[in-house]
Image 1 (cartoon, rainbow, N blue to C red):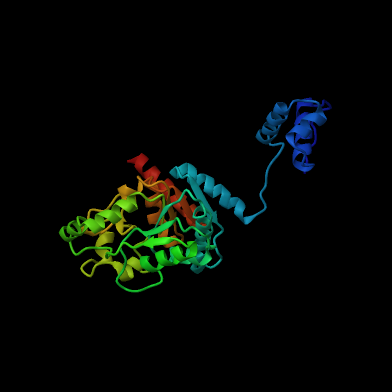
Image 2 (cartoon, rainbow, N blue to C red):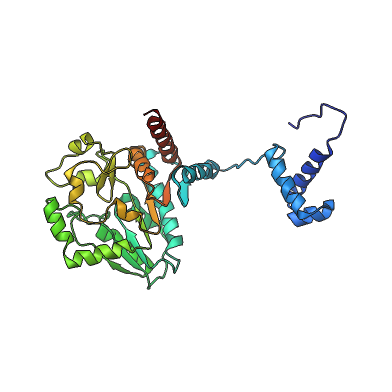
Length: 332
Protein backbone atom coordinates (compact mmCIF):
# COMPACT_ATOMS: atom_id res chain seq x y z
CA UNK A 1 0.00 0.00 0.00
CA UNK A 2 1.36 3.43 -0.98
CA UNK A 3 2.07 5.67 2.00
CA UNK A 4 -0.06 8.84 2.26
CA UNK A 5 1.48 12.27 2.53
CA UNK A 6 1.49 13.66 6.09
CA UNK A 7 1.57 17.31 4.99
CA UNK A 8 -0.13 19.50 2.42
CA UNK A 9 3.24 20.39 0.94
CA UNK A 10 4.58 18.78 -2.22
CA UNK A 11 8.11 17.40 -2.13
CA UNK A 12 9.23 18.29 -5.64
CA UNK A 13 12.42 16.25 -5.38
CA UNK A 14 10.58 13.06 -4.38
CA UNK A 15 8.01 13.75 -7.09
CA UNK A 16 10.83 14.00 -9.61
CA UNK A 17 12.41 10.74 -8.40
CA UNK A 18 9.05 8.96 -8.61
CA UNK A 19 8.45 10.19 -12.15
CA UNK A 20 11.91 9.10 -13.28
CA UNK A 21 11.39 5.69 -11.68
CA UNK A 22 7.97 5.28 -13.30
CA UNK A 23 9.16 6.14 -16.78
CA UNK A 24 12.24 3.93 -16.48
CA UNK A 25 10.97 0.86 -14.62
CA UNK A 26 7.26 0.78 -15.52
CA UNK A 27 7.09 2.29 -19.01
CA UNK A 28 10.48 0.83 -19.96
CA UNK A 29 11.99 4.02 -21.40
CA UNK A 30 15.75 4.32 -21.71
CA UNK A 31 17.58 6.80 -19.50
CA UNK A 32 18.06 9.03 -22.54
CA UNK A 33 14.34 8.96 -23.34
CA UNK A 34 13.44 9.75 -19.71
CA UNK A 35 15.85 12.70 -19.76
CA UNK A 36 14.31 14.01 -22.97
CA UNK A 37 10.76 13.70 -21.65
CA UNK A 38 11.57 15.51 -18.40
CA UNK A 39 13.90 18.08 -19.96
CA UNK A 40 16.94 17.14 -17.87
CA UNK A 41 20.32 15.57 -18.54
CA UNK A 42 20.88 11.84 -18.71
CA UNK A 43 23.36 12.18 -15.86
CA UNK A 44 20.61 13.58 -13.62
CA UNK A 45 18.32 10.68 -14.56
CA UNK A 46 21.05 8.19 -13.71
CA UNK A 47 21.60 9.84 -10.32
CA UNK A 48 17.84 9.97 -9.68
CA UNK A 49 17.49 6.23 -10.26
CA UNK A 50 20.25 5.59 -7.73
CA UNK A 51 18.62 7.94 -5.21
CA UNK A 52 15.23 6.27 -5.72
CA UNK A 53 16.75 2.88 -4.86
CA UNK A 54 18.68 4.27 -1.89
CA UNK A 55 15.62 6.04 -0.40
CA UNK A 56 13.35 3.04 -0.86
CA UNK A 57 11.12 4.71 -3.45
CA UNK A 58 12.03 1.84 -5.74
CA UNK A 59 12.38 -1.66 -4.33
CA UNK A 60 13.37 -4.59 -6.48
CA UNK A 61 11.82 -7.99 -5.82
CA UNK A 62 12.99 -10.97 -7.86
CA UNK A 63 10.14 -13.46 -8.10
CA UNK A 64 12.24 -16.52 -8.98
CA UNK A 65 13.92 -19.35 -7.09
CA UNK A 66 17.17 -18.08 -8.62
CA UNK A 67 16.82 -14.74 -6.81
CA UNK A 68 18.14 -16.04 -3.49
CA UNK A 69 20.77 -18.02 -5.40
CA UNK A 70 22.09 -14.78 -6.91
CA UNK A 71 22.31 -13.30 -3.43
CA UNK A 72 24.25 -16.32 -2.19
CA UNK A 73 26.61 -16.02 -5.16
CA UNK A 74 27.41 -12.41 -4.26
CA UNK A 75 28.08 -13.34 -0.63
CA UNK A 76 30.33 -16.24 -1.60
CA UNK A 77 32.34 -14.05 -3.96
CA UNK A 78 32.80 -11.42 -1.27
CA UNK A 79 33.62 -13.91 1.51
CA UNK A 80 36.11 -16.07 -0.40
CA UNK A 81 37.41 -13.72 -3.09
CA UNK A 82 35.97 -15.83 -5.90
CA UNK A 83 35.99 -14.73 -9.52
CA UNK A 84 32.65 -16.46 -10.06
CA UNK A 85 30.04 -18.47 -8.15
CA UNK A 86 27.24 -20.49 -9.69
CA UNK A 87 24.56 -21.50 -7.19
CA UNK A 88 21.42 -23.39 -8.21
CA UNK A 89 18.22 -24.12 -6.24
CA UNK A 90 18.51 -27.16 -3.98
CA UNK A 91 16.35 -30.16 -4.88
CA UNK A 92 13.51 -31.27 -2.61
CA UNK A 93 15.20 -34.66 -2.22
CA UNK A 94 18.80 -34.33 -0.93
CA UNK A 95 19.67 -37.50 -2.84
CA UNK A 96 19.45 -35.45 -6.03
CA UNK A 97 21.98 -32.80 -5.03
CA UNK A 98 24.83 -34.30 -7.05
CA UNK A 99 22.67 -34.44 -10.17
CA UNK A 100 21.66 -30.79 -9.78
CA UNK A 101 25.24 -29.62 -9.19
CA UNK A 102 26.52 -31.87 -11.97
CA UNK A 103 24.01 -30.29 -14.35
CA UNK A 104 25.18 -26.80 -13.39
CA UNK A 105 28.81 -27.84 -13.90
CA UNK A 106 27.95 -29.33 -17.28
CA UNK A 107 26.45 -26.02 -18.42
CA UNK A 108 29.51 -24.17 -17.13
CA UNK A 109 31.89 -26.51 -18.96
CA UNK A 110 29.91 -26.10 -22.19
CA UNK A 111 30.52 -22.37 -21.99
CA UNK A 112 34.18 -22.25 -20.99
CA UNK A 113 35.41 -25.14 -23.17
CA UNK A 114 33.97 -23.41 -26.23
CA UNK A 115 36.46 -20.60 -25.62
CA UNK A 116 39.61 -20.82 -27.78
CA UNK A 117 41.58 -19.31 -24.91
CA UNK A 118 41.41 -22.64 -23.09
CA UNK A 119 44.03 -24.95 -24.61
CA UNK A 120 44.85 -27.24 -21.68
CA UNK A 121 42.02 -28.27 -19.36
CA UNK A 122 42.49 -30.42 -16.27
CA UNK A 123 39.94 -32.85 -14.85
CA UNK A 124 39.98 -34.72 -11.55
CA UNK A 125 37.40 -37.41 -10.76
CA UNK A 126 34.22 -37.95 -8.79
CA UNK A 127 30.52 -38.50 -9.32
CA UNK A 128 29.67 -34.80 -9.72
CA UNK A 129 32.22 -34.51 -12.54
CA UNK A 130 30.94 -37.72 -14.07
CA UNK A 131 27.40 -36.33 -14.09
CA UNK A 132 28.61 -33.06 -15.60
CA UNK A 133 29.72 -34.88 -18.74
CA UNK A 134 26.18 -36.26 -19.07
CA UNK A 135 24.67 -32.78 -19.14
CA UNK A 136 27.28 -30.99 -21.22
CA UNK A 137 26.57 -30.02 -24.81
CA UNK A 138 29.18 -31.17 -27.37
CA UNK A 139 31.63 -28.59 -28.70
CA UNK A 140 34.21 -28.94 -31.46
CA UNK A 141 37.65 -28.13 -30.08
CA UNK A 142 40.32 -30.22 -31.85
CA UNK A 143 42.93 -27.77 -30.56
CA UNK A 144 41.98 -28.55 -26.95
CA UNK A 145 43.65 -31.13 -24.72
CA UNK A 146 41.90 -32.67 -21.72
CA UNK A 147 44.38 -33.75 -19.05
CA UNK A 148 43.69 -36.05 -16.11
CA UNK A 149 45.32 -34.22 -13.22
CA UNK A 150 45.46 -36.90 -10.54
CA UNK A 151 46.17 -40.60 -10.23
CA UNK A 152 43.32 -43.02 -10.55
CA UNK A 153 41.81 -45.92 -8.68
CA UNK A 154 42.67 -49.47 -9.61
CA UNK A 155 38.98 -50.39 -9.70
CA UNK A 156 37.22 -49.68 -13.00
CA UNK A 157 34.38 -47.16 -12.69
CA UNK A 158 32.52 -44.44 -14.60
CA UNK A 159 33.87 -41.95 -12.08
CA UNK A 160 37.53 -42.88 -12.44
CA UNK A 161 39.84 -40.25 -13.91
CA UNK A 162 40.51 -42.24 -17.08
CA UNK A 163 36.84 -42.68 -17.98
CA UNK A 164 35.87 -39.09 -17.21
CA UNK A 165 38.83 -37.64 -19.13
CA UNK A 166 38.04 -39.78 -22.18
CA UNK A 167 34.33 -38.91 -22.12
CA UNK A 168 34.99 -35.18 -21.85
CA UNK A 169 37.53 -35.29 -24.68
CA UNK A 170 35.02 -37.12 -26.88
CA UNK A 171 32.41 -34.45 -26.18
CA UNK A 172 34.85 -31.76 -27.26
CA UNK A 173 36.42 -33.57 -30.21
CA UNK A 174 39.63 -32.94 -28.29
CA UNK A 175 42.88 -34.69 -27.52
CA UNK A 176 43.41 -36.20 -24.08
CA UNK A 177 46.20 -37.49 -21.89
CA UNK A 178 46.24 -39.61 -18.75
CA UNK A 179 48.15 -39.44 -15.51
CA UNK A 180 48.85 -43.18 -15.46
CA UNK A 181 49.65 -43.66 -11.80
CA UNK A 182 47.81 -44.72 -8.66
CA UNK A 183 46.64 -41.92 -6.42
CA UNK A 184 48.87 -43.01 -3.54
CA UNK A 185 52.31 -44.60 -3.41
CA UNK A 186 53.25 -47.24 -0.85
CA UNK A 187 55.48 -44.80 1.01
CA UNK A 188 56.95 -41.30 0.79
CA UNK A 189 60.20 -42.71 -0.56
CA UNK A 190 58.48 -44.64 -3.35
CA UNK A 191 56.39 -41.57 -4.12
CA UNK A 192 59.53 -39.43 -4.44
CA UNK A 193 61.12 -42.03 -6.70
CA UNK A 194 58.10 -42.12 -9.01
CA UNK A 195 57.77 -38.34 -9.10
CA UNK A 196 61.43 -38.11 -10.08
CA UNK A 197 60.98 -40.20 -13.23
CA UNK A 198 61.13 -38.23 -16.51
CA UNK A 199 57.71 -39.43 -17.65
CA UNK A 200 56.01 -38.21 -14.46
CA UNK A 201 57.94 -34.94 -14.37
CA UNK A 202 56.73 -34.15 -17.89
CA UNK A 203 53.10 -34.87 -16.97
CA UNK A 204 53.31 -32.80 -13.78
CA UNK A 205 54.85 -29.89 -15.69
CA UNK A 206 51.91 -30.02 -18.11
CA UNK A 207 49.41 -30.09 -15.24
CA UNK A 208 51.01 -27.02 -13.71
CA UNK A 209 50.51 -25.19 -17.03
CA UNK A 210 46.78 -25.90 -17.25
CA UNK A 211 44.59 -22.98 -18.35
CA UNK A 212 41.72 -24.18 -16.17
CA UNK A 213 40.88 -27.17 -13.98
CA UNK A 214 37.74 -28.61 -12.45
CA UNK A 215 37.72 -30.58 -9.22
CA UNK A 216 35.38 -32.22 -6.78
CA UNK A 217 35.87 -32.46 -3.02
CA UNK A 218 35.86 -35.63 -0.96
CA UNK A 219 34.52 -35.86 2.58
CA UNK A 220 35.36 -38.37 5.32
CA UNK A 221 31.99 -40.12 5.47
CA UNK A 222 31.06 -43.55 4.17
CA UNK A 223 29.60 -41.79 1.11
CA UNK A 224 33.06 -40.79 -0.07
CA UNK A 225 34.33 -42.76 -3.07
CA UNK A 226 37.91 -42.27 -1.93
CA UNK A 227 37.09 -43.59 1.55
CA UNK A 228 35.30 -46.64 0.08
CA UNK A 229 37.66 -47.55 -2.75
CA UNK A 230 40.71 -45.31 -2.93
CA UNK A 231 42.58 -45.28 0.38
CA UNK A 232 45.70 -47.46 0.72
CA UNK A 233 45.04 -50.71 2.56
CA UNK A 234 47.20 -49.68 5.51
CA UNK A 235 45.29 -46.42 6.12
CA UNK A 236 41.98 -46.23 7.99
CA UNK A 237 39.74 -43.19 7.67
CA UNK A 238 39.38 -43.09 11.47
CA UNK A 239 43.04 -42.20 11.90
CA UNK A 240 42.75 -39.40 9.34
CA UNK A 241 39.72 -37.99 11.17
CA UNK A 242 41.64 -38.22 14.45
CA UNK A 243 44.41 -36.19 12.80
CA UNK A 244 41.83 -33.49 12.02
CA UNK A 245 40.82 -34.35 8.45
CA UNK A 246 37.47 -33.04 7.19
CA UNK A 247 38.01 -34.24 3.62
CA UNK A 248 40.37 -34.18 0.66
CA UNK A 249 41.22 -32.13 -2.41
CA UNK A 250 43.10 -34.06 -5.10
CA UNK A 251 43.73 -36.81 -2.56
CA UNK A 252 45.37 -34.46 -0.04
CA UNK A 253 43.52 -34.40 3.28
CA UNK A 254 42.83 -31.02 4.89
CA UNK A 255 41.69 -29.89 8.31
CA UNK A 256 38.83 -27.47 8.96
CA UNK A 257 41.07 -24.47 8.31
CA UNK A 258 42.22 -25.76 4.94
CA UNK A 259 45.65 -26.91 6.11
CA UNK A 260 47.10 -30.31 5.14
CA UNK A 261 46.82 -32.61 8.12
CA UNK A 262 49.96 -33.91 9.81
CA UNK A 263 49.75 -37.48 8.54
CA UNK A 264 51.94 -39.59 6.20
CA UNK A 265 49.04 -40.01 3.73
CA UNK A 266 49.68 -36.55 2.30
CA UNK A 267 53.33 -37.44 1.60
CA UNK A 268 52.21 -40.40 -0.49
CA UNK A 269 50.05 -38.52 -3.02
CA UNK A 270 51.32 -38.97 -6.57
CA UNK A 271 50.41 -35.72 -8.27
CA UNK A 272 50.11 -32.00 -7.76
CA UNK A 273 49.29 -30.52 -4.37
CA UNK A 274 47.34 -27.64 -2.91
CA UNK A 275 50.17 -25.16 -3.54
CA UNK A 276 50.16 -25.89 -7.26
CA UNK A 277 46.55 -24.74 -7.55
CA UNK A 278 47.61 -21.16 -6.80
CA UNK A 279 49.69 -21.15 -10.01
CA UNK A 280 46.76 -22.19 -12.22
CA UNK A 281 44.61 -19.58 -13.99
CA UNK A 282 41.14 -20.87 -13.13
CA UNK A 283 40.38 -23.49 -10.49
CA UNK A 284 36.76 -24.68 -10.50
CA UNK A 285 35.36 -26.53 -7.49
CA UNK A 286 31.99 -28.25 -7.88
CA UNK A 287 30.26 -30.20 -5.10
CA UNK A 288 27.12 -30.22 -2.98
CA UNK A 289 25.46 -31.91 -0.04
CA UNK A 290 25.47 -31.47 3.74
CA UNK A 291 28.24 -34.05 4.16
CA UNK A 292 30.52 -31.93 1.95
CA UNK A 293 30.13 -28.65 3.85
CA UNK A 294 33.24 -28.92 6.12
CA UNK A 295 35.65 -29.75 3.28
CA UNK A 296 34.09 -27.15 0.96
CA UNK A 297 34.44 -24.43 3.60
CA UNK A 298 38.03 -25.55 4.19
CA UNK A 299 38.93 -25.62 0.49
CA UNK A 300 37.35 -22.24 -0.22
CA UNK A 301 39.11 -20.81 2.80
CA UNK A 302 42.53 -21.61 1.30
CA UNK A 303 42.02 -18.96 -1.39
CA UNK A 304 43.04 -21.41 -4.14
CA UNK A 305 39.54 -21.65 -5.66
CA UNK A 306 38.42 -19.25 -8.39
CA UNK A 307 34.97 -20.63 -9.31
CA UNK A 308 32.55 -22.43 -6.97
CA UNK A 309 29.55 -24.39 -8.25
CA UNK A 310 27.03 -25.80 -5.78
CA UNK A 311 23.40 -25.76 -4.61
CA UNK A 312 21.81 -23.13 -2.39
CA UNK A 313 21.48 -25.18 0.83
CA UNK A 314 25.13 -26.20 0.63
CA UNK A 315 26.21 -22.64 -0.14
CA UNK A 316 24.35 -21.24 2.86
CA UNK A 317 25.82 -23.91 5.13
CA UNK A 318 29.33 -23.18 3.83
CA UNK A 319 28.87 -19.46 4.50
CA UNK A 320 27.59 -20.20 8.01
CA UNK A 321 30.53 -22.52 8.70
CA UNK A 322 33.02 -19.96 7.41
CA UNK A 323 31.41 -17.35 9.65
CA UNK A 324 31.71 -19.59 12.69
CA UNK A 325 35.39 -20.25 11.96
CA UNK A 326 36.06 -16.53 11.59
CA UNK A 327 34.39 -15.84 14.96
CA UNK A 328 36.39 -18.64 16.56
CA UNK A 329 39.67 -17.18 15.29
CA UNK A 330 38.64 -13.73 16.53
CA UNK A 331 37.94 -15.11 20.03
CA UNK A 332 41.26 -16.94 20.02
